[in-house]
Image: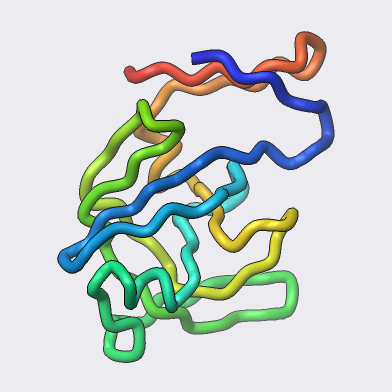
Length: 127
């Protein structure tokens, strides 16, 4: 799959998450600088997870070290085409680049992807 991008602009993708009690679809931003997928706590609850009782993971942010609930998504589908199971995700409200969901390396490392700024394209393939 090849998607058009604007060099220097956030790369937005559609992400659909599945948990024990349902699904949640969010606009997501590709974040190669993040290890985890990040979703809002209310989305985790909608999926059937309990962020208040989930184990905490230490995360280093620009503002310092914080401890954030971590869950494991049953399944994550991006762009209606790329799917992976058992994806670690942090339950955290972010407002990066106008989105509430970040797609970090926990998901991206399961795909082959490349960004060509000169051509203005993002290419994603299954390995």
